[in-house]
Image (cartoon, rainbow, N blue to C red):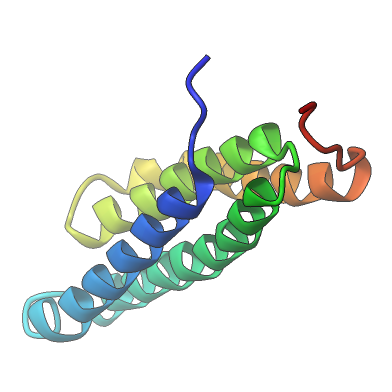
Length: 124
């Protein structure tokens, strides 16, 4: 199994959030509706906040803790939630909004896994 470096994934998520946030603020302002800008901002906020959460998990991983299931659940949730919102803001069909809550649910599940799963260190 390939070990995912969650510190790097989180850094990528946050860089993407900054870039997409800037694009939304400057590139979309003249062509998107207020509603489309609002959902773009929501997608960016959730990408950024959960990217920061993954950063903390990445630090735990560097300290030897097993966080793979938690981090993967969060990352898939981020991709579905923010991804569908970004697509809708760009004019893709509104039915994608039916998929968005699945991403939100995965993010909730990821955080609950952190609450309820025992945080164990990797075996040396």
